[in-house]
Length: 241
Image (cartoon, rainbow, N blue to C red; front, side, top):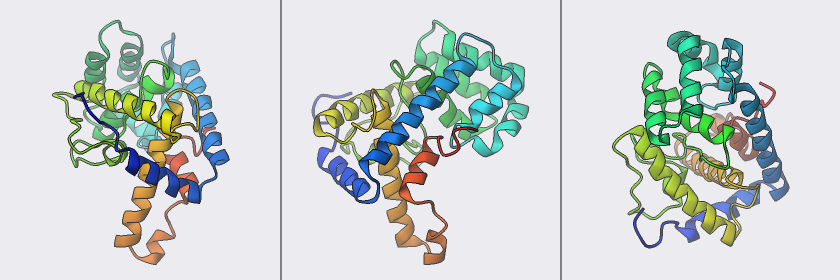
């Protein structure tokens, strides 16, 4: 990441002010605690053991982009291949970018999972080491997402491979975390859970704003309110699975 400002602090604070106008700080704290519960549950399912088919399906139900297609995804990739891929992603001694690329390649038949699932599993099974990356945070194909909305325009989030992009996203997330802890907009939870909640809130505010401008009032009424939209994006709306 280049020297100089990375976080657009003014925009980040504006997004947080808009969030707090709609969601009490205590509710954001509850969502962060749910993320800790999700993390503990995924570690129990996937770390230091080879997951079985139903355990893989359960893990996929806690990811926004795979919740409704968990069993189909396991069928497409194959339960054994997916279990081996998860074990490699989480337990191999190779670099995280290399592991990310291998897992994304395994999921190539299901592109939305290839984009979102590796970062979800890395982050929530080792939240003190790895960060979240999903398409709602940064989608290189359409060049938008919550992370782009709160970083300066010249920050380069593109990598030569998904794994290299994951590393660039991690650098930006670290800057958002550091700036947010100092300015008070990522303090909903400990560690990077506060950043997760903040970025989901940013995307939720952005999504609601765009929908209000482009969609009918009847359609907008179908969109979840901001607290539940944040929960859905972070995979904790139905935490029990």
